[in-house]
Length: 275
Ligand code: HPA
Image (cartoon, rainbow, N blue to C red; front, top):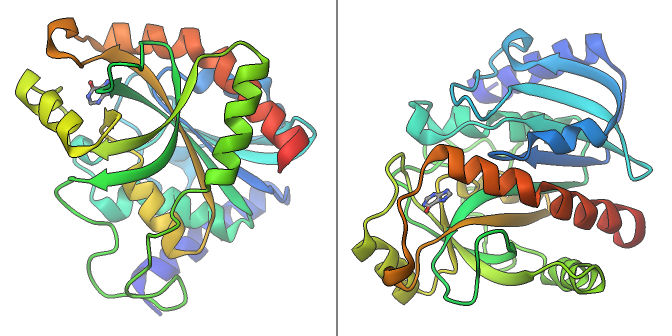
């Protein structure tokens, strides 16, 4: 057995001692979005630090717990707090929880993140449903020996994102007066924010938002044939370059938190009516 596969089974066995809850959906709650987990009717909560092989989040804005329960009448498991490559974890560690969620039986992964807007139409506070990505992160979680029990050596990325679900999300946003767009996510390593020249380049490359997470999680989910849906909250406007302001973690968290209810409403409606 490969080490990765063994470690997934270890984590799974530990979680299964704590709860026999069978989630249908996985949620990743990104920067400033952890409060959404309070809307889950909780059945079980496990801190990451207790779970064998789980990394422990080092970013203050991320809590680090696995929350099981019911949301919008569906069984969900939420990763409250995620791991980033810039924290020093390997790409395999960053994406390990996604592997475990798949083995817990989820049918779909709903991912959120905070991101900078490089599209002049996308304002701070807007939701952006991701239709595609550009990966400029330095490493890849699928590098190294491939375990065919997890997925294929060369996973296809033509349909990494579900555009029908984005269309449903856009209708929900419109019905509720929520500003939303569909767009391309550019994944960069961080942890520094981008220079004006880099934001401009991101725009020229065809990106709509820029962030430091999500891409490795999507690659690993798609490797395991797990459908994903991704929503970015645009927390700072970085294009055109005259509109760029200094960005702090506090401002990113504040804008993401303020948009959290809008995202929660879209997810809740998708779970109730579409999925
Ligand atoms: N760049 C990268 N990541 C981010 C940004 C940004 O401007 N805003 C929030 N996350």
